[in-house]
Image (tube, rainbow, N blue to C red):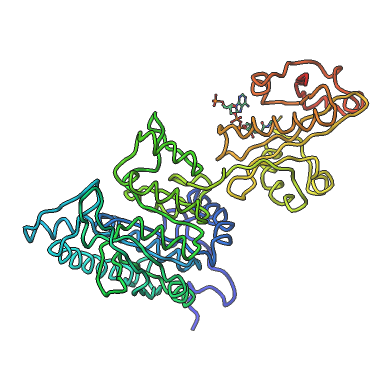
Length: 463
Ligand SMILES: CC(C)(COP(=O)(O)OP(=O)(O)OC[C@H]1O[C@@H](n2cnc3c(N)ncnc32)[C@H](O)[C@@H]1OP(=O)(O)O)[C@@H](O)C(=O)NCCC(=O)NCCS
């Protein structure tokens, strides 16, 4: 029975006025949230069906962010990412050794695992594994894991060999990876299981060996041909001499940092060599991410700038010529700058016709910058137009690289002058060898089209 306050069937109830009980009005933060989710879509498409191997030490499993990490793993798995987790237990092993009064012994930072220590290792590894499994098995209502059952599996996927005697020191039950049974891990991943690996390896003789988490994660990532290997570490990522985060490095650059030995925290000292080897052996990217930053994995994977350091075999930035496939990305890149009047409006159709005039810069296969060259052969002059870099990637020299590419193209086409019309970027061009001139210096064809209303400044550079 309808009452006075019931809306008519099919009609909409009026929204509550601001401040009334009920659903809050859409706010700026809601708009930001919607924009963020939309911006994440390309990454979600790119990562579905890809394998990520995440390595983390025992401190993470026992730390305050362990639960959030489980939530984020649950989200990654729900997005179709094939997830392998490799946990360590160094802190838990040390605690167990202390509890039993067994001395912790290391040689060059590597644990010496004698039979007494091995008992502690087995205990600490087992307890840590159960705790991680429990975290991954949460499902309480009103938590991000409600309704999201993650089936966690593991097994005898790794065979080990003893590290043996190094510098005259017998490491006893400390082991190194001998073989990863990748088919079995992949078979589990195919069933939408999350694979949790404990760094204990069995030998064909039936012995158990204690291995380093980071080496196991590296070996697994290489064996299963992972898209990404991620280490959660005790630093925001790799830092330069001034303590600033380095967003991306090639394996060769990372090796130089390692050789210089500067700014390496304890984790980075161990993880960076594994990262370098992994990308050289076919893992597309290795990420070093802060274990103490809540949501670090999500920020690293689903935002353009990320929060840690990416190690790749080859540079992530690539300047190349544009093709028809780039038109959509070009529209997305330049339309905000057309709307605010920084760039002249072009429209999609014109871009489609003129796309081969563009050079573009990619970061990790995403288009993040562009510039176009329009030659006026009669006057041996060319125009540089539509120079733009996505805001998140500015101040990394990409604008400069695009300018160099355009200058090289202009020289190849035997142009002796490059000019540009600009309303807001005069100083940027001046600092790169351009000098101001007037519209009368433009090639005749361009002079006829010069838009007096935009009052652009004309800059020219002799090539
Ligand atoms: C101009 C633009 C392409 C530069 O790209 P970029 O990749 O950041 O360029 P670089 O890294 O090579 O150079 C960055 C330097 O230029 C400076 N810069 C950026 N915009 C500038 C401007 N409008 N005027 C003067 N300097 C500027 C930055 O402050 C930085 O200098 P700093 O590191 O010493 O502070 C980018 O800022 C952009 O897309 N701007 C909006 C579009 C535009 O103005 N295009 C030109 C149309 S003609």
